[in-house]
Image (tube, rainbow, N blue to C red; front, side):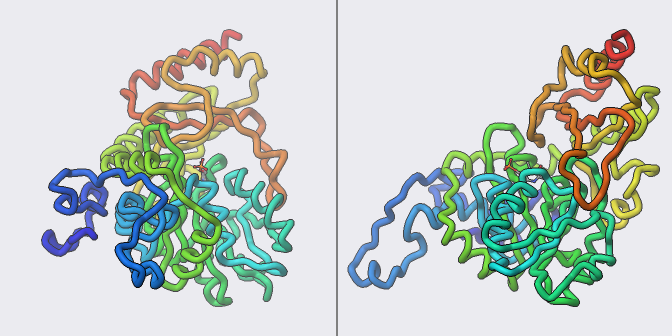
Length: 393
Ligand SMILES: *Cc1c(COP(=O)(O)O)cnc(C)c1O
């Protein structure tokens, strides 16, 4: 497909996202990969049909468009194999199902994205796979939780609401010593800011809906694995009937091309606003791992190459009315789920009802912010006006 040889191998993320998976001269010189739509793929002869002997066989399996995005993500992740999924959650469920069978146990971080937890509790439980939740800060102590039934350790770093930083190298070392797979939901950092495979992870999952698509206009996921895990994931993904839409795949390719430059701005503006919030009297704590005093900063500094635009704050106790007064009428920050698009978002969250291995008990409300690509001064003014409404309420 992509002939990288004539440009030489590139290690720079900015060049990988702009060139990965593209082969203009396979499409008459047009810069972007064409959008192939289709179910049926014709075979030229009886012999080829019976042998299933050609690159493309059926639209559900692969198309040149899905291949282009898989190859671009694979190169960026530095993995051996990438498959797409119709959403981030679909990538998570497919990845987990690739490794487990009835009677197995999995170790799941207690800080995990809530719908991942719901998949474990509602689906894995029905097929005889037990989920054991663990403290995200367990580090090498994960060894004590591994039993003969443990098939995989699922990590998410940082937790996408509460921002616990997991010691991924310590977890992978302990897990691999017992022949246990390590999966990572790497959506927050993306492969640009966390090199999953260099830290020993077997499978790196992206909700591409977030920063890869980057414009809040499509749902998409990816699973990238090392060579050891590739066959299991490939077989499971095909058997489950995964097929990403051609339009979504195109939007993933479109978004990916600007990922590196967008992330720089999310990182810079996010950190600036986190620092500014840290000085505000209304804020009890800022949960942003790149702040020197933040919990988990040492791990972030050791293992991560940057931070993105998502972080949380804990407010000092205020009434619901005061909180509503702040959140209602924000000009730039929208209230809504998901993140990773060009626009800023803010949502309250409360993990109390579903944590089982750890407790979540801040004194005041918790807010998660996604810092978009707007001018940072406009975002500060917007939040400052919100705090004024909060105090006045
Ligand atoms: C959003 C999200 C997902 C799920 O992605 P969808 O594309 O919305 O299904 C998975 N993990 C994390 C950390 C997320 O933020």
